View 1 (cartoon, rainbow, N blue to C red):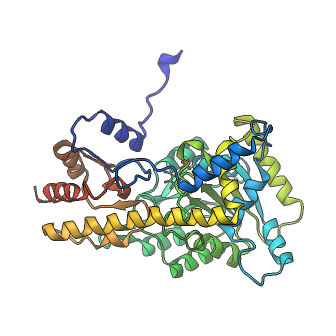
View 2: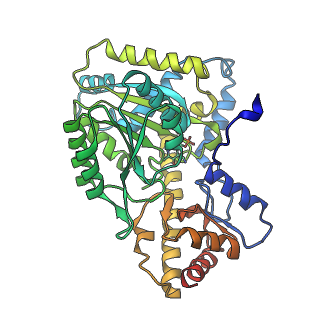
View 3: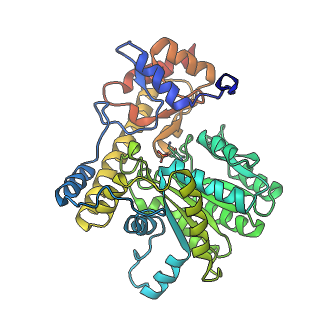
Length: 415
Ligand code: PMP
């Protein structure tokens, strides 16, 4: 029976990581996997996460291993939604307005960002039956798997202008305005696009929001790097908040991950937010939640509670929240410093090409600009690991290896 199973493709980031681990060369550098590393190359449990863990442990709550609910922990979910949509953040907004806004968002706890993407795709596939999903080219490769499993036909829109090394607004706008149909889904990276690190400007987001409204297409925001990209959680949620406040007829999804911004990769903490139109009737939120719960119950009953407890403890406490923002700054500044260090080294070496994109692009990744054969060469000759698209995870570099990485890039570019 099992011998007839089909071959499946390997997941590239995890297989590059596996190859790196097996390499015994002391000079090896891992720029493949999207995880934060400190300046000595180690993982970093956030200081605030450790403090929250101690706090949780000390309370010794007998309920701590009990089931939560199919929809997850309500305290966690409301803080998670506040973080995305900024409810109650602006001073002077009457509570009644905030309450009305909150009612437009139906949230459910998920198995991190991947689970949120998957659950949202499944709900749309079963109930809205979109003609297709428009996926940015390039994107996080798992988008293809997720929508494939949901059985929705996939099409690409041109996301990246390889010549200018920026977001291809003209290509995106042209494709979405001429080729989409009502109820098609469009995947949008809310900030720090993976893999390119190139995002739309605010003006471009405004035009895209209008376009979604005019065409009746369903935005599906993937929010995997809130706060991690710029060090400012509010700034990184700008696009989503703009859609929420300005295109009232558009209903959309937000897949939120806490893997990167809390360093809780293996804990699988996330949520899916379904945003309803401002004219949705009072029964709709309940119906949406019931459908989501039905899918979750049949898949895994409920998302795990440990990591969500940590996020809830931090976001629900003013002092810890401040400390979290400091930890975010620590991570985003180190990444920014490494971008500048790599840029300066390439300039010092006189490496052919324009390297300004290394400092202009944001977030964890840069599309450094190597061809597939150059990527092959840099791994073979120099033991520097990255994805074959030339995507590098910036925090894999530090003061001790950035010169080596620049030298290796310089070598494969010239030969
Ligand atoms: N979306 C994007 C764009 C990502 O880069 C990632 C992490 N690599 C995720 C979603 C999901 O990550 P996780 O499941 O760990 O939250």
